[in-house]
Image 1 (tube, rainbow, N blue to C red):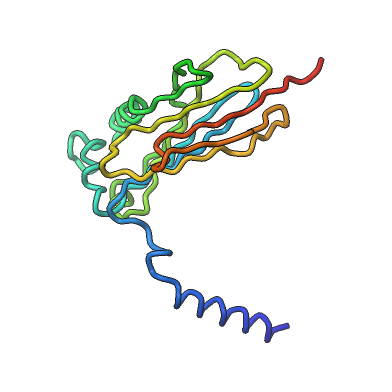
Image 2 (image 1 turned 135 degrees about the horizontal axis):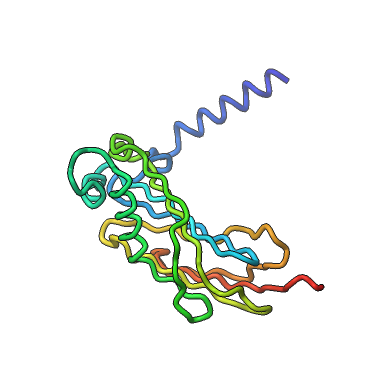
Length: 187
């Protein structure tokens, strides 16, 4: 048993040596926007993790730390979240959806400068409850496209009343669509 564990560890170590270092590296020159859409019967949430790479962190931080004191204040965090929100376009069944910021987390600027700090923003869609049948959610992220790299995905619904039936993304993943069905519970 111990020999097989040691052998497996050696193979893993060798694999790490032959993998290109870029496969394990974080992009230094991109502002990564990783978006996860969660669709449930009474609520749609959009969670965005924003990670500025080292080479673009100063550009991003200049948009957040407006008084240039090296600290992200509560007002600066709220202001940046609002700016980011204005650069999002969300439609549910071809109708513009209003987003509401429900949570945010901003790490210290020193952490963001390392390329590993993650700004977390969570929005909910304030829309009337969806009716039974097929629906489509369209999400577009237009925030800082010159330096950004986008990821878009839908989470598996917790409720069996919602079924994700398809996802589409444009080439950059700044635009994503989620087709889903809602089957209300029978009374």
